[in-house]
Length: 149
Figure (spheres, rainbow, N blue to C red):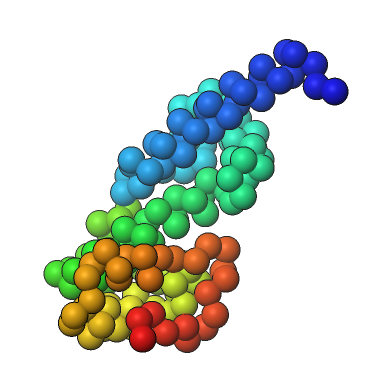
């Protein structure tokens, strides 16, 4: 049985976590780190990380990178920017880290994704391409997974 004050605290924490998640969704391209997010939520970095993972199933950093990769996928499908330009546009400061995380989530490197998306774009509506190519979280994408058949 949970005492009333503990239950109230949990609700306040959940509201703060929701604001942190919303901030990540809005400001994914900005330099964000767990310490800055925690300060904004009036929580310690450790408490924020533990509670965010408990509430959403992944760390704040993982959630941020997933948002960045989703946006990168959309930019790469459009084909107007190079992989390097996309990397910096979505807020990543390291092309190597961006490429590694992109490959973990999507199953292919950003350059391969861009080539495959360009070939597949001929005749596929963008709303369908977005749904089919949604990134897989937590390293679930099998290596060499085809994007669009």
